[in-house]
Amino acid sequence: MSKVRCRACRSRNGSVVLDLGDQPACDYFPPMDDRGPDPVYPLQMWLCAACGLAQLVADPTLPEEPRGAEPAALVEQARDAVERVSAAGWLRAGARAAEYGSPHGGSWSALLDERGLQLVDSPAPADVVLDCFGLMHSPDQAGAMAERAGRVATGGVLLIQYHSLATILRRGQWNSLRHGHFAYYSTTALIGMVAANGFTPRSAWRFDLYGGTILLAATRGAESGSGADSSMRALMADEEALGVTDPRRVNGLQHTASSSVHGVHDWLTRQKAAGATVLGYGAASRAVALLCRAGVDRHLLPAIADASPAKQGCRMPGTDIPVIRPQELVDSRPDSVVLLLPDLLDEVRVGLPQIESSGGRWVDVESLLSGIRET
Image (cartoon, rainbow, N blue to C red; front, side, top):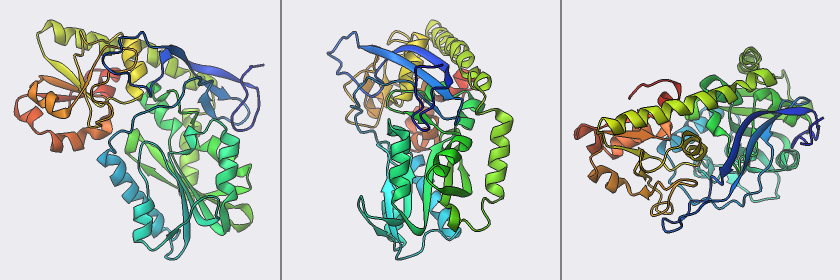
């Protein structure tokens, strides 16, 4: 019996499926004059055998993440989601709406206001209660879900958007595990969480963001009418085939984590030996464990550019790699730029055309993790 207690159902029956060892806090970017060493903390994923929720074992760090620049892909995804949910009839003008947001951005508030919905503050009830990538930041998953469900007015809808565990498994995104993110949702586990609060899933929409995100709509059981639609049934079948609640299948991320970091280190080493200038873009929290486990320092990756002024002048946690301004990246005329946030590709190509016009190329880090392929 595990000493860990599930953050959702409180069961102690489960197992560690991914262990990234001791890692620095991924949301604290030290100033460059702080030479460290940075404190490190265990970083492990535990899968509950009772409800299937994948979750962070423990997080002794204090959240201090500097505000990042909101990616255009996240803004566009929010707009797309509002269009789809509105078309399904869930966003009527005059309805009350409450949003639980994420520190990473992606708010719907302005879009809902444009459609004539009335935004209300906590703890007022609402006809539409939305959580857009916010739920995963709550250590107490059961309490956070109960709070959101409890605010849904009679006849209302609960909307939850999340980075799918199915995507993490399918694409080998082991570096999605990080401090401050307490849960990694399969639809199977999330349905159990809403059911514990008397809700039934109705519909689900898929989006390309982060390689695959899901938006789930649920209503109270007595108000559910015909129940789940074909989108839900297809999603559940897909997850069952992937084995999202099978610890042996989820533990495959451990092998991926061990093998893929060698590809990153080896590629950077070859580029260095060939005399190529390689820099990075996107000082993301998800890149911290990747760089640390791959043993990448400024000798192999001299700098990482980022649009967030709060991160510029700092260094990546656990390494001596400085975070620079995008203009400094352009001025360096790199041969290659490793894109540590693949969703930014379209945005950076438009915003920094000088990279390619001067002969450089963008390299998707996920491609390095799975086998070399340049963009």
